[in-house]
Every structure is written in structure tokens, then in C-alpha cells.
Length: 308
Ligand code: GUN
Image 1 (cartoon, helix red, strand yellow):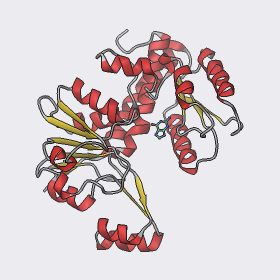
Image 2 (image 1 turned 90 degrees about the vertical axis):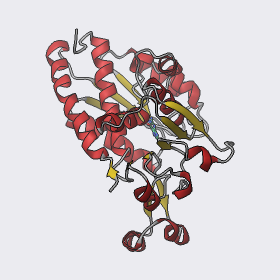
Image 3 (image 1 turned 45 degrees about the vertical axis):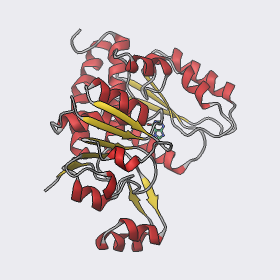
Image 4 (image 1 turned 180 degrees about the vertical axis):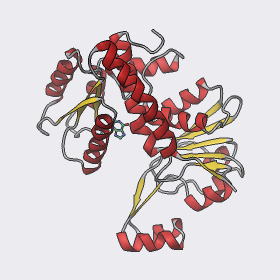
């Protein structure tokens, strides 16, 4: 029997740990942690993500506000808005929901967020702190993967970890975080030769590609730990037949679409010693880690660190 790595349980643990820290900040700093979320445009997925983020913040007693500028806002306009948020003392965390509309210079915007308020961990300074092994705010999704592994007592030191995908949001910071845990890390991408063979060297395989069930049986060494970061909506019937078992296919017929990760769910369950389901694996951690980063940013900014 393989072990299902339960992201919802780890999320609940991390949220529960934030509670007393928020309380403590209230008592010592006289205010809750504050999070500002900037949402430009009307991307439906982004709207759902942002609602979930602010709802979770409110559940934990974290102050949050969502700023929705005119979708036609220019890069310069957005930079000005970020500067205002950088200067507001009661705001500890600033999150600019991605993707931004095409006419906006995303890199320039992410660079403008004050590094000490960069709760997404996307600022080059925070990336540099991660790369050089110093404390800083870490990107939420890969930090959540590390929490899943640690809290299921899965050792990383000395093990071969293969990360498929080299994005700035997941792949690259994931590799650096695994390296910081003393794993032997390989990063793969679209130009990697014989990807399946490289993946089969993995004790810990992390898939962050963004392609539905691309990682199939011949990529997975029997007994490997498989972490599926992907979230893909399958709408094509033939594709659904390739991916899902009979019960899931029935659900697909009813809904017309179904969520799947980057790893073939049946192959993963059959071959992996431990694996994250989609949904219910890595997904729930992203928001929990955002809350933890917001609390941490508030503790640092107010000088109320737990051991201070
Ligand atoms: N869009 C998809 N994932 C993320 C994330 O982790 N942070 C932000 N800001 N936008 C995203």
C-alpha cells in the first residue's frame, strides 16, 4: 500500500500554528498582520484564488484588503500603487496576483515590492537569499512541498530529487529548497534529453510542468516519493479516457471537465511509495504558506519574532 500525502492535514497544522502568533502580534504590536492583495483584470481563476486568500486571512485574524485597479492601469500606475503599499506601516505583506495583463511589465512590478513585504518570495533579493542559504521569505508553493515532506517524516538529505519544470514560481525555488535540505538535486525542463530516464533516478520526484498527466509509469521509479504540483483542467474526452479510471470518468461525463495534476494518477498510486493527490495534495499548502509568510513578515517588521 502506498501512502497518500494529505495536504489538507498539513495545511490545517500550519494554519493552527499561525493562530497563536497572530494573537501574540495583537498583544505586542497592537495590531494584526496586514496583507494587501493586488488583482488586475478579471481572470476567473485568479479571482477564485484571491477570494480564497483573503477568506483564509480573515479566518486567522489577519487583516487583508484586495485592491482591484482599473484593468487598463499602466505599468507606471501599478508601480505607484505598489510604492503606496510599501509605505503603509500596517501592511506587512503585498501580493500581486499573477498573471498580470499582457501590457504590464510583470518583472518591473515584482521588483518594486519591498523585499520585506514580498510574501510571495518572488523578489530577486528573496530569491538571492534563498540561493545563498540565508533567511528570507520563501515562495509559497515550493515551501509547502517541503512542509508536506517534513511533516510526513520523509527524509531528503542524501536522496536524489528530480524537479521537472524550471519556473521562477515553482521549479527553481523548489530545487533550491531541496538543496537546502541536502538532497542531490536535478532540474529538468523541455530541452532535457531522455526525461523519463532522468526521472527514474529520482527518490523524490517533483512535477511542476503544467501538462496534464504527462508523467506516466515509465518516469516513475517504483517506490519513489512523487509530488504533483500540477493543476490542469481536462476537457477532452480522449484525454480523460487516457487519464481517469471508470469512477472518475463518470464524474467527467457529468461535469464536462475534471482536475488532474502533471502526473498520471493511476500510475502514481500504483508505483509511488508516497504521493500527493490532486486535488488535496500540494494545492492547499500554497495559501497556508502565504499566511505563514504574512505572519513572519509582520513579526520581523514589528520586532515581535517568537524568540524575541
Ligand atoms: N498565480 C499562480 N500562482 C500564484 C502565486 O503563488 N502567487 C501569485 N501572486 N500569483 C500566482
